[in-house]
Structure formats: structure tokens, C-alpha cells
Length: 265
Image (cartoon, rainbow, N blue to C red; front, side, top):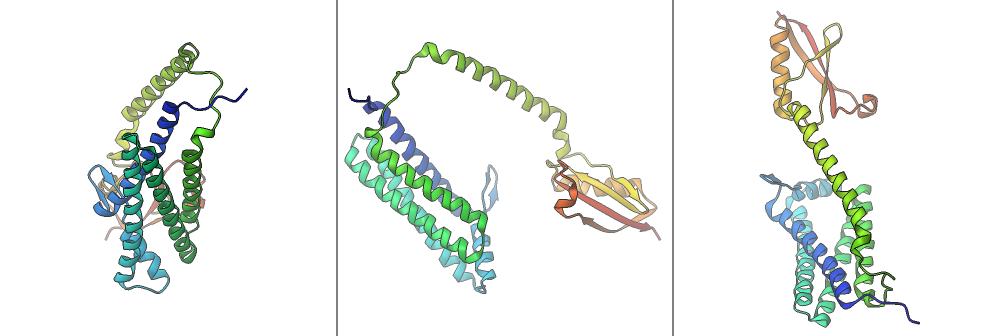
């Protein structure tokens, strides 16, 4: 007796998921280069500054070199986006052969893009980016294997039984409710850390420590200095310095800085 296979609708749903993921993935990568930097409702990454830093570290400080590298990367991403979007559209039109061909080109371009990035990571010594791009390279390969061999994979022995899923759905609903309440409770009790000025703790002669919270922004820093000056009118700030990360003793604070003062003239 042959093993049950995925039905056409099940395989189509998974293929839509694969193509949808890569289409959206490359769309946001392309938008990141078009928009550039941080804006309202968009915290992107300044890829030009990143490429400029990479090439400058290798002694190539001319701006056109970074522009050329960014243009090559952007072109590869655009082509990958076009082919994955085309494959998704063909699949939606039930043209499976065309979708298969377009998907293959998208996969090849994606693997080529991550290979190009990995070579750059080696040249510029960025091991974190190398790990990320290598993982994406293998995820791309796995995506193609699943897309291509979907019809040959064995399907689950039992179909969709709603009665078996109700306990899991109920548990998920309870966990979502508890998590949501916890988020809103934390936001109500601690969000003021993002705007409220901090109090400096005296730790030595003319030396004060400030534990800067993770949510704190520039307004908190400026407000803290203003508050410190008003509370210590007889002292003037000589300098402000931070401590190395390993010396923070694994505290949850995003930053610890010290204020060194001297008697005001």
C-alpha cells in the first residue's frame, strides 16, 4: 500500500507560503535601499554607510567604490524579487510549469546574492554577517527542495480533525491573553523610563553613577543632565564616561555612565 501524498491544495498552500515569504523578503530589502536610513514607521539600515565602512577598512575610501558594490547588491536583490513575485503570480494563475521555472530562477539569484555577500563578509572580516548569509543560503536551498519535491513527500496519516485541535487552540488563546495583559501592564508601569529624567547615585567624591534604562532615549539623557545640574548647583561637570560592557555585571541596564564633577568656581 502506497503512502499518502500531499493533496494538490495542501502542496499549493505550502508553495504559496514559500513564494510569498521570499517575495516579501526581497521586497523589504529593496525598499530598505530605496528609502535609506530611519524614517517614520521605518527603521531601516544605512547600507551606503555600511558599504563605505567596509571598503574604507580595505583601503578603498572612494565613494564610487561603495556605490558600485551597493549597485551590484541592489541589482541582484531586484532580480530575485522580480522572479519570486512572477513565480507567485503564475502559481496564483494555476500555471504550475511557469511558476516552477520562475521560482528556479529566483532561487538561483538568491543563492548567487548570498554567495556574493558571503565573499564580501570574508574579505571585510564580518563573521556575524557571514553566519547570517550562510544560514540564508542553506534556507534558500531547502526552500527549493521543498518546492520541487512537495508532491513526493508523504502527507500526515490523519487529516484535519477539528476536535483534536480545540484544546491546543484554547491553550493558545489563554497564553495570548496572559501575554497581552503582561505587555500592557509593563508598558503602564515602566514606559515612563523612556521620558523621565534619572537620578544620579553618588558613588564617590565628586563621582556619580547613572543606570540608563534600555528604553531611554536622547531626551532622557538630556533631562538627566539638566536634573543633575539643578540638584547640584555647587558642582560643575568635568567629564562623563561609560564603562566597558563586561564590567556592567550583567545588569539589565542598557548603559551605565558616570559623571565626574568638581567644585563650581
